[in-house]
Image 1 (spheres, helix red, strand yellow):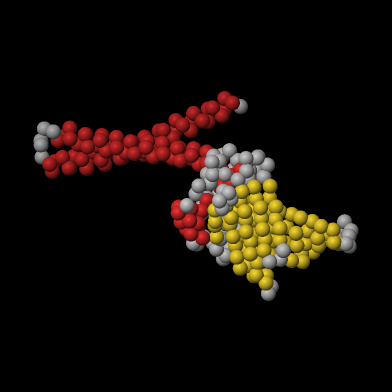
Image 2 (cartoon, rainbow, N blue to C red; image 1 turned 90 degrees about the vertical axis):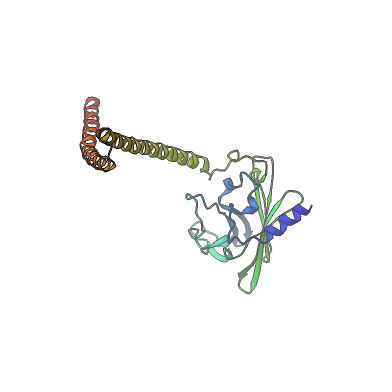
Length: 274
């Protein structure tokens, strides 16, 4: 019980400035980063003679993902720097009429999220003090673990507080990364490509290091053989310098021969294919 209280106090003092999935509050949720991206909730109702639609956008940020937006600035009418953005639009009768945006709600990234774990395993993320005209708005995201593959995402708003109830198996602590289904997620593929890139660079580095060491051993060995009968340290260093210059002078010619053979082989291969 004491540990839970300490955890809650720590989470409430978190100083992150966005719903950042790398925040320590999410450290026990193994698959949480697979939920990264902008998620939306839309509700429409008939308001004769018009139709009113309210749409909420929630940006769950994973800083390591370069393929996902860090900001909602690309969403029309949403202010830049919003963690949560809400739009109310009105459409008048007639298929040619455009939607008119009548209300814009924004929970800025300047608002510090507060995290709290409930006894039932639910994790709540709260944002307080968003300005909307003369009013202030609060928002709370209730992230609930579920064993079902289908997620549920619902929002209620009374013009003073936004309450989002979100159920997804990615919010389960025992969920393994990679098991969740998220159509926006490409992390595993990106990771595999990144691993291949690092493996290739590592092999090249080791080959380069071994070649340099072999070259150094060859030069030193050649100088030592040439001065073994004399035994003078000054003669050894003179021979070492001469051997280094002679060996390095052969490197360009060696590289040229290798390039010629490789290029020539490639040209013949292309010709044969034709």
